[in-house]
Image (cartoon, rainbow, N blue to C red; front, side):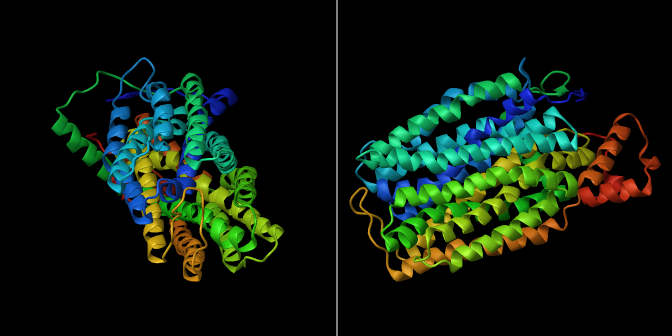
Length: 502
């Protein structure tokens, strides 16, 4: 299958239309990471271990849905293109699945509650996959320029952080305004259902695709489709840049998931109950400082990416975040609030680069795959990225749930009435919020030294792809290009740009 490849520079309207969709991507994942486990343990009254199993099983479902959606979007043919159709289809399911996720229908047995929330969580993840896998392909679809892609991802991350900020400030305020946490969660879900669903109208209308597949869609039996999906998905692991990106991505995002999930327990039981402070206002202030700093720091991260590349930017911010985590570990409950705010400022700066770079790397990793396979497989790679993201969060929250059980966490017996945890439980909460990010970020930093796509090398890669695409001979490659391309793909040059495309 050949492709008509057109060059078009995205306008600011296109960029903002694309970016606004991540109000859902950033906001939904943040609220789930920060509040869903607490909702299941403290409002639904499931044990932390059962709550962790719900998250883990629900996310594992994406082992099927993510690569399948990547394959479907790669092979979709419609007047709206391969990807944009799903932005339109997903609007109503986004709204409904989010409300159902936070609705407790008065189920009284643990079995009934477990089954209900497991099924609804699977539904939510399916809807998320439906829109976010095609959405993640769009920077590679809309432009091949390094700076344009970085601008797309930076503005996208600003909206993602806006979603996180709204998730940090509004849910606790809405829930606290109601006499019953159950009612508060339902109202919160309705408000955010609208916030998450409506922007996809603008994403659909304001984005475009430059890679237009030619020819008829090839129809295969279901068994052959399953084999092709598995083959396409596994073949991405040949790409050295993807393997390194995955290691950096997991390190940063699992650290963030554990950090954000434990932060709720840390602030409620280790800080506010020890000092007699109001939990809601303290949580909102500290989390708001983290997210606002993270948003403002994205512009710094963008400049660093454009100058030094994604790997160096990642290392700088991961190191800063590790300093902040150490500071949080050293904090004692009786320290004044301004000290905690200072630690949160450092945390927000560190998080910004660690959140931006793994996503920003995707479009460039796809370029490396084109050099390997001679194909544009944005959907397959977006499916892989979304799959990794969800499995990583599943493992993180399962770890949190099992760990809380191991350290003796006691969930409230009466709705909305919280009890003081034992010293051993408080120590466990403090250690997990420290040790997990330190270990993971260290591994991420080590991995980043092997990632070779920077602005200079990316231009060499793109120039070589365009030369070969225009009919150039592989034998005419110069030594510098050969070395750069091999360092990016991890494969011998002779095995790249194959004569036969599978």
